[in-house]
Every structure is written in C-alpha cells, then in structure tokens.
Image: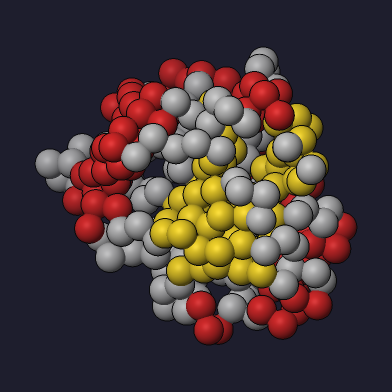
Length: 262
C-alpha cells in the first residue's frame, strides 16, 4: 500500500479553510496533519474537507490557540491525545490508520523570544515538553509509527539560513537541538525528510516580518516528518511545497510531504 502524508502548520484552519481545500484538491495527500488550528473541534469546517474525500478525522481543539488535527482518506481511529508537560494545551493527537501505522501529530511550544528559562517561562515550558516527549517514547517504544508536526526547532546547520547568527535565537539554540536529539533517540526515530534530502539548505518556515520572504530566504526547517526504523526505509519522495508560502494570506509555514510504500 502506498500513501502520501503531509504536515502543515496552518495558523488558523478556519481563517485559511480555502487554502486547506486548495492543497487537498491540488496535492491530494492521503493524510493531512495540521497544527495551530486555533479552533474547537466542533467549529473546524469538516464538511468542506469531507467533500474533498477526507472523511476521517481525529482532532484536539482549543479556542484561539494551538490545536492539532489529522484528516485522512482512509479510516483512522484516535489512540491518544497527550498532555505533555501538563500544560493543558491541545498540542498532540495520535491516530492509527487502517494499515496499522500510528501517526503522531505534534505542535511543540515555540518557546518565546529569550532562550533562558530563568527569565522566560515559555522557554522552560518548551524544554519540559520535549523532556516529556523523550520520557514517553523511552517508556513506550514506538513501532510502525510516523511522527510529524511543527516541532519549532531547526536542528541542523543547513536547516537555517545562518547557523552562527541563530545560535542564540530560539528554535536553533544548542539546548533545544540537544533536547530534540534526545526525543529522536528515545524513539529511535528517523528524520525521513533528511533521509531523502540529505544535503543542502532546507526550510519550511519564513517569518511574516520579512517584507520579501522569498528573495531574502531567511528560513528555518521547523516542520518535520519522522518514522520508526521498521518503516523508515519505505519512505520516499520527501519535499517541502515552498510555493504554498506565497499563496494569498498564507500561513508562515509550508507543508512538508513524504510518501510511504507499505
């Protein structure tokens, strides 16, 4: 069975309903994972998505903030919605597809502006969230699983536009990169995107603050697709759909795709 999965921080699913529909029509991934939906589940525009073939959904919502959802053309059942670091935020949902693959959809806290938990509570929450993820996967080793989402960390030097300039900027600090590496090691996760595209600069996010984001190209790879070793070799065709960042009233993130032959 071959299926394509996409992950996208949509930055309000209701505000950008038309963009989600456009991606569903134009690219038609079998599974679409959204983060930062900013909507209670009951107010997500399900009818429009179902009309495009996405009849199955698991989601966790929150008014105005956070929110994660998995839309699928194939049956999916919710298996978990974790409250990492006890924040009470809608930042994780997991569903098991009809082919037996579990999909974890995460929205890791951004962490605020100052990379010091002593003066920035949000940065501490981010580190605690990642630590909880690490401990969870260490205690419950995943199998036949895919982890996707806006992890809000660009781990590699070529995942950012300027490594040295961003070493003290939240999302690329050494302590965040180390915490993410610990999460990856705990679950024995494989970075599918970099498995397919091992070299070169690669970004999935460009700030709204840049007046000409495309020309300046000061991006970061904050959005990820991982898989467990038992299915990672079946992944192929990874890509970041950069053009979506240029759509009208876009999210500041672009969707990331991977195809699995299982």
